[in-house]
Length: 266
Image 1: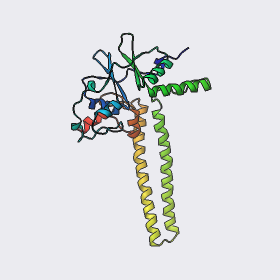
Image 2 (image 1 turned 90 degrees about the horizontal axis):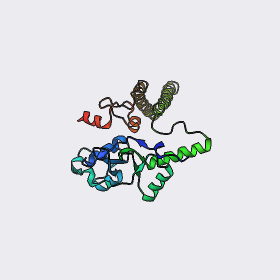
Image 3 (image 1 turned 45 degrees about the vertical axis):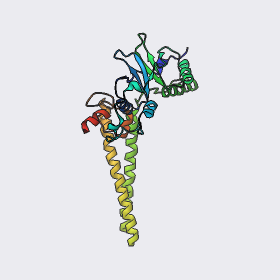
Image 4 (image 1 turned 120 degrees about the vertical axis):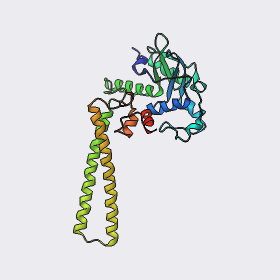
């Protein structure tokens, strides 16, 4: 039995309308860590696809998916609408299309994604090159072991990742504290000349700074894990939307998505 596309597509994908600003589309890509946006009409019928490469070719300034353009540059990026940059009438697929045929379409047409349409022709999902790699890895693993991987999609392991980092930092902090004790004992037991005292003082200060950074990160991780235990990790406290996993890895204690954080700062 052939694997249907639906098994690996992203359902209910983030989309944008053709009259939205291209700069707003870039903000959406950065916020959600994605490279493709289906462009739809108010009925969710697909009009086109906008890719990060399209935006990079359209904007005169260099852009990145890691951070939004600086505030000072944004007024000079214009009000370019998505409809002037997107690819019109993109290749689409149905959810029951075999995965193999979807891969052939992506390869033959040299495109980065396929919008997936429901029976009424409205946007149901999207499958990207990254999804295809995930599918390949999963199918190869299943073929080799006779069972599917424990986790196939999504970010259900984010809390586990943060817990492991918390454990590593606790051990590292213990190492820093042990090193500080050793320096203190060495100063007490061994007479040091001026140069040696200066070197040890510098090393002690550096160790203390590392310990301070570790403590700050530990507090952020503990806050994130408390939210995970309460079922709130990854949910914006302001708008109720999703906080991308990449943002939570960088800022575990954040409770706001990028858009709400930017609104709060302004």
